[in-house]
Length: 195
Image (tube, rainbow, N blue to C red; front, side):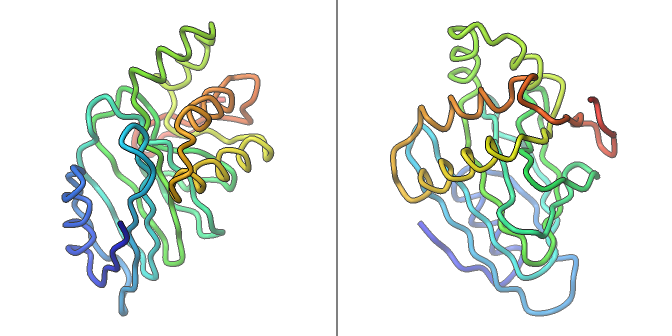
């Protein structure tokens, strides 16, 4: 499903149609040309949002879902009051109940909506308990370039319907393993680096 949007309320309505309660506000002046896309599978849906204007999104997160979000352009979003770094993942902190981020004009984000239960079961089955600690204490992670490229390609393929549910989850688990990270940041509004 792909929907063009020309106003913040239109994007908010599209997000609500797929079960995401989000308030959206346009922060910059000018005509908004945006695209919202939903792809992937029932078990691992992928959201894609592109915008030509600055947008602020705030709302409740779906319980039991870890949004694994990345930006595909040079325009870096601000997540929970902190500017993101190129090659990073965001939004996955398990204990957060709300979403708060700003998309600058030109941004294109993609988010894999991973089942928290499935992710935690996979981590437990592989003995990767340190990654569970990461998703409970951090909301952003700076990845090694090769890990970021791998996850980005898998999420893009999943968006297009490739059926890589397990591959996306395994690649995310490996990328969020502490020995693979270049740093993390907490999910507290305006808080800084943890590592």
